[in-house]
Length: 148
Image (cartoon, rainbow, N blue to C red; front, side):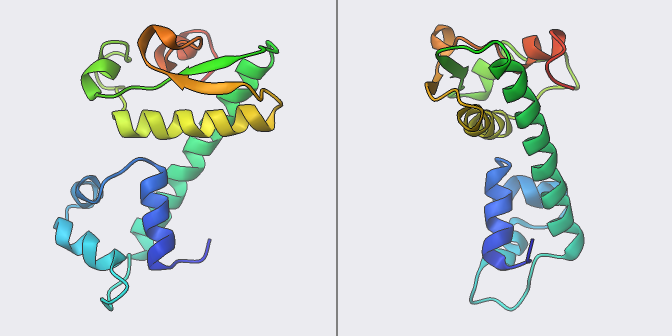
């Protein structure tokens, strides 16, 4: 992918990260990340940060495609994917300590799963809160062997 300020921002947003979270990940000030993304500022994302974002997105896409294939294999007529409003709601159904996912990362992955399901022919795919979901959260999918 060609490295531009807009591409870097799109990558960051596609993996569900805020500027503050990316700054913390690379031990820089949030204003540094803001400069990297500001078209009027001469500084750019460092190569290692851009590469990290590309890898994070690639991993997320691989995970999403794997999940979608597992779900689509059952040929469901309708799929309602879990979507969470808060970190607390997600934590209530998450993995053991040390394997938790941030709610923005989880929801970003679920959006990719939805895209992959539609590409696999499951046209009636949508999102639901809590008991509305017909697909179990990722912790249960991992236990079922549908996800790494």
